[in-house]
Structure formats: structure tokens, C-alpha cells
Image 1 (cartoon, one colour):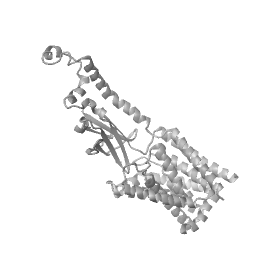
Image 2 (cartoon, chains in turn blue, red):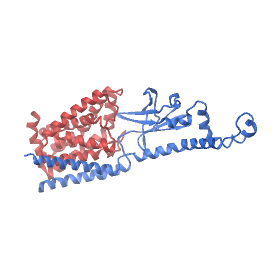
Image 3 (cartoon, chains in turn yellow, orange):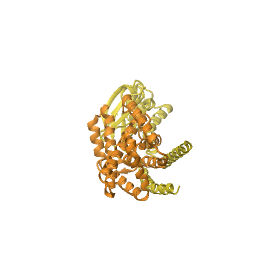
Length: 216
Length: 211
């Protein structure tokens, strides 16, 4: 028993050292995992891929799939900043979601799902142009509208239409931020994960010792 | 070095799972009561080691420590690494469930191979210097072989063996040296404070390896 504790102490010293080192690393939110994150901006979809917060995926292959049919729609390489953008494909305007896959090489791969709802603002062909332009123009358009276009069309925006426009604009602005928060939250293993894992290993060893001892 | 979900074909995944099951069975059969705590402690080291990044060289890669686990445990490294990989997949989202077998094979087999190399070098060069050299070789070789085996698993994807092996080996060159040193210091430390443990694996080995 004395030998055991001596051996344990020696090993524990090494493990403690490793644990301290790893905690420093964990603060940096390291991951041997590739992260992908995408959002709609105007008429385009922007994709951002990184290994960690400050290490973007350079020249990784992004493949875009139709989430409903599973067909590959387009493919592209990420830039030096780990970014890739493509125009919203007609399938997404037609109410299909998108599945984006990043292949960063060496077996690194991850996927991001874009729900059809994210493209809702662009859904029909004609409002697709007006919706993204709306946030910049409301001040300009309503002013001339009553005088010049009043005769031709509905005079001004009804309250409901205006609310929808503001909602769409807010959604397109806040969406990425919300997403980014979500991405940051699961950015890497936390201290809890590390300690939990070590606890599991201890438990498994304990169970092994117990059963090994009972077997003569 | 962890391969992610969805990269490999079902055939490769199945082969990996079968090999990992065989390796784990051999490991569990050779596992002795006295080794159990060592297996757990090294499993913990492997589990945590993946969080330690070595920011040297082209890409910052993390420690693997499969060479260290292999040198100290022999075939028992297999179950030890499997448990750590399972927990890494569950808690860190490194690798994944379906690729667990393949990942356990790449790192476990490399660990076992580095144990054989460690023993061979030890036999060639007796003495303290020989022990250090053997441990360094074992630690460094574990990473190198894991890189080659990972590339082999990727050989059937569109990335191809050559490109993957080249990338993985260059990215892990600093890791090889660091892990060689870690293994060297750990083994010589154990040789000082608890030499029975090393002798046990060494005396135990010849009969086992020929069975």
C-alpha cells in the first residue's frame, strides 16, 4: 500500500503539472475541432470557419447542400480570414434550408445548418431586392412617396408593413450577433468538462479495481 | 489528429471499430491488477494532454501522449487510450462516436508499436543513457506513427494519403520532439522513484509478445 501511494504521488505530480498547463490552454479555448458559422447578409450568405478564435481556416473547402434534397449546390474555398460568401441560392429562396460543410483537411470537418426561416425575408423573388435595401432607405422613400407615387400606388407604409420591415432589418442585424454569442459559448472545453472527464476516469479505475479484486 | 464525424466511409469506420475492439481485448487480457491505477492515470494524462497546444512550427497542434502511454503500459495502452478518446468525444467534441474505433486504432496501435521500439532500443543500449534514448524514441515515434496511421485512414477520402501524411507529419514535428522529451523525463523519473514499474513491463513483455 505504501508503494502504491508513492507511485501515485509521483504520477499525480506529473498530472497536476499537465492539468495546470492545460487550464492555461483551456482559457484560450483551444480545440482540435473546426468551427463553422454562417449568416445572411443582404443577398449573400457569409460563412466563417476557424479552428480557434484567432486561427481561421485558410483555403478550406466549403460545400453548400440543400438541406431538404441533400443535393450539393455549390462549393468554394475560404479566404485567408477563413471567410467565404455566396449569393443566396434559388433553392433557399424557395423555402429550403441549407447545410454548409467545411472540410479543413487532415480529417477536420464540421457542418452548420441554416434554417429556411433565415431566408424568409428574401423568400419571394420581388421583395428579395427590397428587403435588404429597406434599412438604409426608410428615411428617403416615405418622403417623396406621398407626392409623386401617391397617385400610382398605396400612399405610405401601413403600420403593419413598417413593423415587418423593422423586424426584418433588426433580424438581419442581430442574427449574426446572436449566432456569434452561441458560437462563443461552445467555443471549447471548459474547466467543468476537464474535471468531469478526470472524475469519470477515476470512477472507471475504481470499478476496475473493485472487480479485479473480487476475481481470485 | 482526431478525425471528425462524417469524413470516413462506413467501410473504414467498421474496420477501425473491429481493430479497436481486438486491440482493447488484447489490452484487457494483458492488463494486470497492479497496472490498473497506472492505466487510469495515463488515461487521464492522455485525456488532458489534448488541451495543451504547442505553438511551435507551422500549425499549432496539441499533445497526443500516445507514445508515453504506450511506453509505460504496452498493450494495456489500448483500453487506456480508448477511454480517454471516448471522454474527449463526449466532453470536448474532439473526434466523435462513430470514428472512435478509427481514432483509437491510429493512436493505440502507434502507442503499442512505440512500446516495442522502446523495448528494442533498451535491449540494445543498456544503462541510464539507453533508457533515456529508448524513452525518447518511444515518445516521438508514437506521434509520428499516429500521424501516418491517421493519413492511412484518410487515404480513401478525397484528401489522399500523401497529402494528409505530409501535412500531419510537418504539423506534428514539434510535438514529436516535445513528447519525446516528456516521455524521456517521465521514464527516467519513474526509473528513479519506482523502478519496479518499468521492470515489470519489461520482464512481462517477452512472454507476452510471443504469445
